Length: 151
Image (cartoon, rainbow, N blue to C red; front, side, top):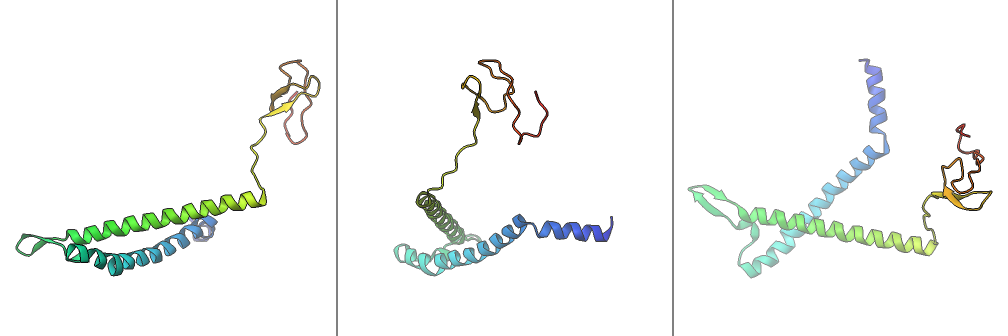
């Protein structure tokens, strides 16, 4: 394998939009994760600790001697996950609502691609790819954009 070709191929791969978008997403996700972890550890867990009498992180069970089962840390991780999922859900829901309102204000609606056309001879509706009318059996002219040689 040629090193120059490998470097060129790797450069093309790494500069693709999807890879760059994914890298940015991972970085933002890491930063977002630390914010949610701080929210859980520094705000929510102490508040919940007021009702339970202890902070979740401190909850544990001694199994044998010094071996402990730290289920409080697991509960904190579950709360972190649920909070992050809820926040992402709310953000996506707000984004979709904003996109729908923007599309409604601009009046832009994506129309589905046509699947039928009108026969120029009998004016009946026929499939868009038809080369002969199924109603009057006329041979239809091939549209210039098709590029194929049917007929």
